[in-house]
Image (cartoon, rainbow, N blue to C red; front, side):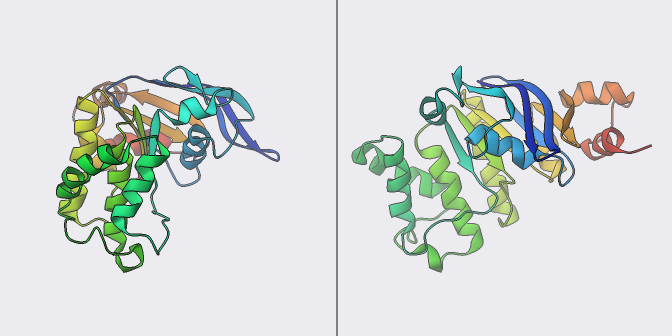
Length: 241
């Protein structure tokens, strides 16, 4: 579903990411963790086409983000860490707009909206303007917009920032069920317990390099500690001698 091939991104003389090679398959929940400045956001932006690789390529469902950007972007959705949405648009209008961008018919969007709103108990506020929403409710609408058009891949950057604990669990359960139905999630996060609970595989990024990408059990084996938490694994892989 997602293949990153020899990705390098250089800013002047600085390599933000170096020789990243990764395959994420259909139905997989992949979490990328790493320190601040390790290159996580750079990778996300390259997948989205917001940045262009200095070398290498990224394939979304076999479509190259370099040579077939429209076809590649049609396959995915994005949930940013901070939703930046016009203040003078309602939640309902935002969902209609998001669906239309992906070619959905208005009647199909209308059928899906009630179910989506029900996930977060947003019924009754969907006609309010975004300027009147809390940070958490803005994030909820951003999550629902990503699910609306049934993408193949959802890119997620810190999905539960700004959400209360109950809403955070709902959000993660929605993403997990999306994977169970055949979708793919690629998530960057600093919330290691969340990554440990939901991920089928975890990648560890440090100083622009992907230093590990495996299941939790296999990462534990590499540490010779079958009970190690993801936090312990993370510190073991990223520590400096």
